[in-house]
Length: 277
Picture (cartoon, one colour):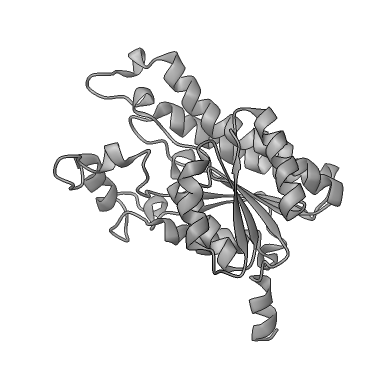
C-alpha cells in the first residue's frame, strides 16, 4: 500500500458529521479537526452561541461547519436538527456523541455525602451521559441504517473501567455508555449492516469546564490535591489536552478502522495500566 492510499483514508471530503455537545472543549476540537480533513460538520449544541467561535476559526478550511440547535435529552429537537442537517449538508455519515459531563450537585464532598446527593442531580448526570448518547444514536443512526453505512463514536471515560471517588453518577453512566456501545455495535451489524460501525473513546483525565472545579484550585490556579493525585498516577505525568484525543477519534471515523467495531479505546496517558506501585 502506498502513501497516497493511506492519506486517502483521512480525506473526509464529501462526508457529513454531527457532533453533539459540539460547542464544548472536546467537541469543538473534534469539529475543527474534521473540517480540516474536509468534512462538512454540524455542531449540535443546546447553546448554539457558544459555537460561533468555532465556525469563524475554520472558515478557510477545506470543509465547512454549521451550527445547529439540539438538546440531546429532547428527541423532538434532534429530529428537527436531523432534517435541517440533511437539507443543508446531506445525509449524516458520522455521529460523534460528545455531549456529557458531571456537576457539583452529583459529587460527594465533606459538605455533601453520598447519602445526601439529591435525586435531581443524580438523574441529570445519568440522563445527560447515557440517554444523551442513546437518543442521538436513534435519531441519526436511522438514516445510516437506510443507507447501510455510517460510523458512530461515543465518548466514554476511564471511569467506565475503574470507578473514581466522589462521582458515582458519572462513573455509573459512563460504564453504561461503554456497555451500550458494545451492544449497539453488535445489534446494528447483525440486524442491519456490518458497514455501520460503533465504537467509543475512553478519555483519561482531560481538563474541561465540567471537572475544572475538581482539578484546579479556583484561587491559586494550581492543581488541587485530587489533581496532583491524578498526575501522580498517570505514567506520562500530566493531564491530557483535547488534542490528544484527535488521532484516535479520526482513526475510528476513517476507513483505516473498517474492521473495528464494538471497542472502547483508552486514551489516558497510561493511567489504566498503572497499579500505583
